Amino acid sequence: MELGRFSWWVMLVLVQLCINGCFGCLEQEKIALLRLKASFNDPDGYSLPSWNSANEESECCDWEGVKCNITTGRVIQLALNNTGYRTREYVNASLFLPFEELNYLDLSTNGIQGCIPNEGLFRP
Image 1: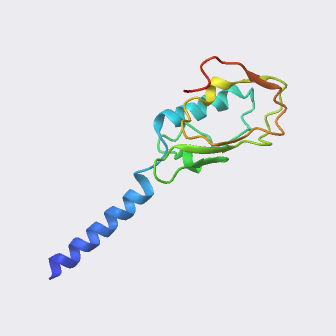
Image 2: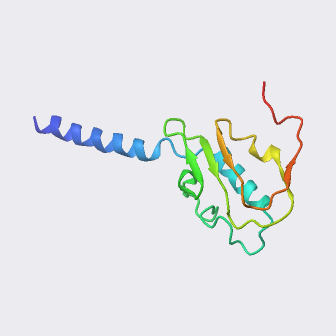
Image 3: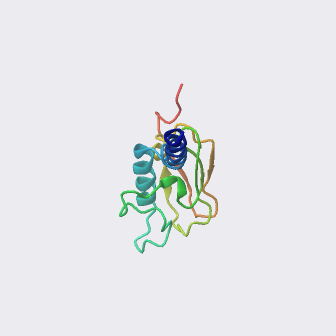
């Protein structure tokens, strides 16, 4: 009887750990987010401070403006409006290709002029 109770506690702890950590952000999307941030010409580093590669265990689904699918861990929303990015440049649209489940993108109030066209941007 005591072993059965212990087994239930172990299973409960494992399920909780999996819920909180099994479906974190995907490494390729984390790298893509860091590349996107690097493309924002921000030499002072004030824009998107939570997007940090210094901490290897940093969970990109918890970063400012990022929302992930709780089942797949993929990025589904990027709300990057008014991030402090104030340049009159064009964004390379191919930077968004790694986000296969992205269904919402807000880049408003950042002074972005438009996107650099990319032939491979649209998937069949």
